[in-house]
Length: 449
Image 1 (tube, one colour):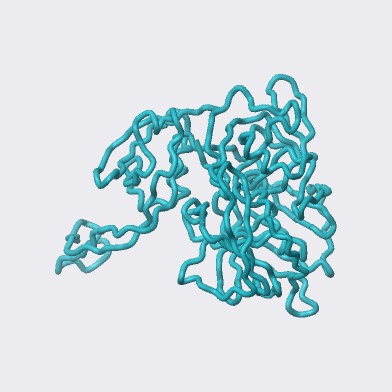
Image 2 (cartoon, rainbow, N blue to C red; image 1 turned 60 degrees about the vertical axis):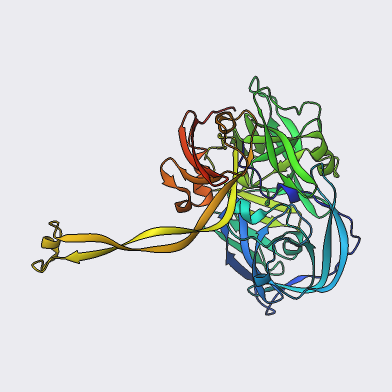
């Protein structure tokens, strides 16, 4: 069923506010040419550290949003927000709109790259539960406000983002690079591409795609945005994510290729949105979909908003395959649990006097005590109907205890989800806890596309 785009829900949010800020990001020091920061790559998303009013938080870097958004603040993350007022947000999905706050006159900082008088949108309810889906704490998302004041270079292999001062930046000659013009609508960048939808023949269709750094999937396409854009016969129904306005539904499939200039990506997975979500997403009527992190991570990327262009260069991961979750389970982080672990004490006999003797079984390990440590816990959030997991009886709310003999708390969320991408007909053995009762399930992964 999944792993879906974790920032799909913010790909194109329609904000009701008419407030416009003239704030800018600037480099400290009049001659400073660049600033860089390491990032975490999680589910194909770039997560950077950024200070908000002196408090260090984690943000997803996203070309697909034109506002800076906070959605996960605890008491420990509390910070002073200024000039606050209430607004209403509407996003993808079928549900109602959501109340939020706008805060003005804030200071955002990435080392010596500083934005004064910044607007922040604060969601009063974290509908998306992004941290649970990512497996680490994520406080918000930042996009246009950063990109408009710097040339941004994302090096996925080195896990580093570079912010270049436009006053001093000169693009280097790069024989293997290709530069494309960007078209902007509501401060979001679009690029022209081609998709081959049918494996019979080689017909390619021109499409205009949002450059969506904050979407972890490969490609989204909107059915009927062009007559030829239809879900292929070979597909399966899926929950594509959670949005401000509710659950986002659609079809998941695979197409022969997508091309951006001279770069051709073979057999990417593609998500086709349902009609309701497509209606909200297509405020820009020329838009046919999005290109997300699962493709962008295969390049070195330079984004230049001021000159309306993007430059791509293939990286070492360009030819990697496009896997997907074949279990039907959407699993999320469920906080920490206290786990009992054995603490072994080792003794050597009195006659052992060297490494060679010690190696001849003259040591004894006894379990004399136990330690208790907080470890991650994972829970099933969705089960796709008629999926392998559904057919054996796994349910929403089941807490995963182990998978294929390995305790779940010894795995990261990425490693756990990776078990569900391990290949057609792969056997999965799971122990789960349901209402305090331990249960065992077994199923095989099924390749549907």
